[in-house]
Amino acid sequence: MGERLRRLRPRRGALPYLLLLPALALELLIHLVPMVVGIVMSFKQLTQFFIRDWSAAPWTGLGNYRMAVDFSAPVGRSLLNSFWTTCCFTILSVGISWLLGTAAAIYMQDAFRGRGILRALFLVPYALPVYAAVITWSFMFQRDTGLINHVLVDQLHLMDDKPFWLIGDNSFTALVVVSVWKS
Image 1: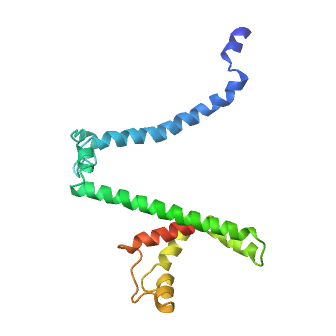
Image 2 (image 1 turned 90 degrees about the vertical axis):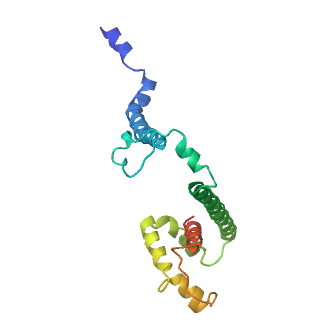
Image 3 (image 1 turned 180 degrees about the horizontal axis):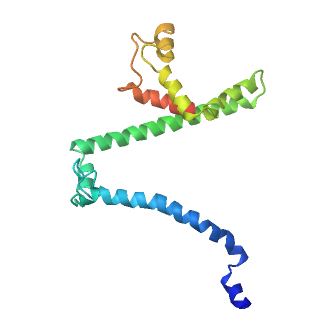
């Protein structure tokens, strides 16, 4: 009897892996099931009539994908525009962040008066909660009362009128500025 129990008991080195199995199974379940459901849904012709019961929607096969990659159609043009906007945002955000971060790191190597305070200021974007940063930046980018327009238009006179930063073409610039600041 004792020999049989010893064989059923896991070896000592395997115990940590066995204890991780439930967590691994739940992680796979949490991530894989929605991915598989999303892939299945992408092959269906979903309309507003089938949103509640998406499993009853007719099967369209690769039709949704054909429509998305047809760049002469509106959906394809929008997809291509989104792709190029994402590429530009990534290149600008990462490039400017890298350039400013490298310059700041080189500048901070030398000892100077106030270096500790400046280092602490560099940590503010990391220490500030994201929701507080979003609220602060949205106030700063307000058209009539925001700090950005006050400085650019009223104090530095770099622009003739106060632009909208959070809608339209200027929103890309505002997002790049916030992304660089956060990085």
